[in-house]
Image (cartoon, rainbow over all chains, first blue to last red; front, side, top):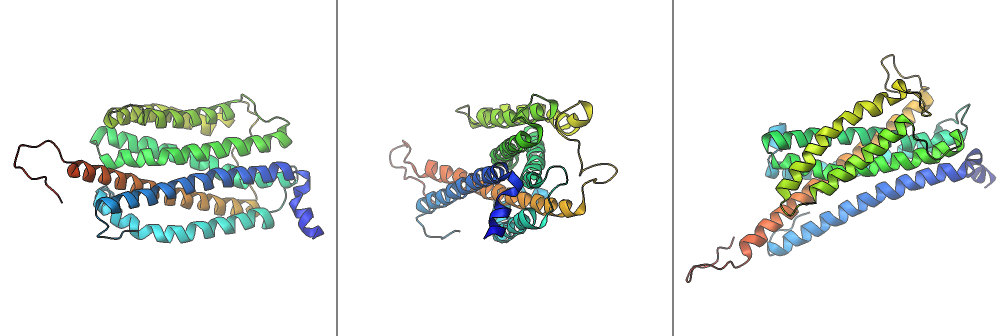
Length: 57
Length: 251
């Protein structure tokens, strides 16, 4: 456990290091999620228009 | 091959085959990169553990430049050859480039505070990257500003091409001006000056960022093509006022 907390403290730079990784994960993860949701929505819309005769993924 | 992929139907087929592979490889490479960056890479002898910010900051900067180059080249192709897929590719890539640029700016700020004692300085490197961010935002705004998407697309393409002068300014800003930002240590004529123990994790993270970009670019282009097709279907399905007796054409 002390090993972990020593690692997590990042030599005293914990605030900056973890904020930087957090920022990267939130922004890149956010645009990934947005891209994926819009993609699913476009497939659903297309399915509806085509009478869902063909399933696409 | 490029010209064949430039056909939307061919593109849907090819990207549909590649996308599952990317979707598996991308998270794996990113996880390995994060492991190397957070556990394996050594602390810097001057910067200590804060150097780990490099592994999320530098690849974001590389992708910010690379994606802009792609947006500008695709915009040029769209302007000259009027190729619809080129414009769709450029407009699908721009928000991703803006995201990488924002990650670069924010993580740089979080690195600058402990190392330089300031969140931000108006020096050549930081200012030119901020300009890059605004070029992305301007491009996205212009592309969506007109009711006629053709006009907005062309105006945005011109902006993207003009903005390309900013790329060498960013790249060489640390050599041309006396900046707070350190000089290039990886992509140099005389080879990298960074140690292998840091270069390898950096390259793995950069590859992971590149795969993330490729995956999301394909997803976004496919989305745009789906939406375009849905609009076309909708137009052909709406009963238009037609001469009496004419039956609406379906299918």
